[in-house]
Image (cartoon, rainbow, N blue to C red; front, side):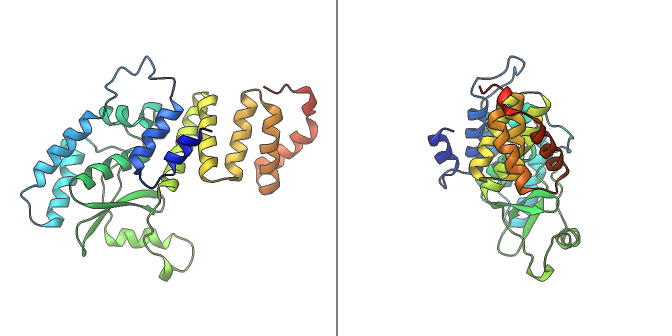
Length: 273
């Protein structure tokens, strides 16, 4: 893994959107696919920001200003969307996703946060079971918590219900912000699954390697890395990851199957690439 890339990814001087662009450039370093004949620039982001800022410029009430901003963004600029079972790979690319108005959840959260921040509000990401959501702070008294994909906001009743689903003492549960690493792992995990579905195993392996640089020795990611190495005919390397997963998660059904397979396979008969 490129050390310069990792240091930039972990830098506190870069925001989430910048880090997502770094990841995109690293994973898709071989360039834009032929069928992606769309604008790959982020010029439209500045246009959206300027138009949204102009819409709220004369409004004095912070709450009204926030509501007008969200309405402008989701309805006038067509950010309103619904969740998909499988997002296309293009939705995990910042500029293409924005210009096509088909953005994966974390990409969209980062772009929406960028626009709202540029319009003068503070924003942060929260985990509200079972989704990552955005909080727009109107002022010291008011905040709007909303789903960045659909644009739908939560009222206090629904928020209380969601928080009750969290484990632990409810009296100790607060709205905890999500740091960039958590959002990046969420993004990379989803992208990895899509790439596996498309049998782009080399790029999926790059996703796992980045995840493990952010969350070292995650047994589920080690399992997935083993699977991908196996698909790429690197079985001798994959065995270590498989064994780590089996040792760390012995009760997992997949671990029990892998344990039997590892006992039966003579790794000396496999070629290391």
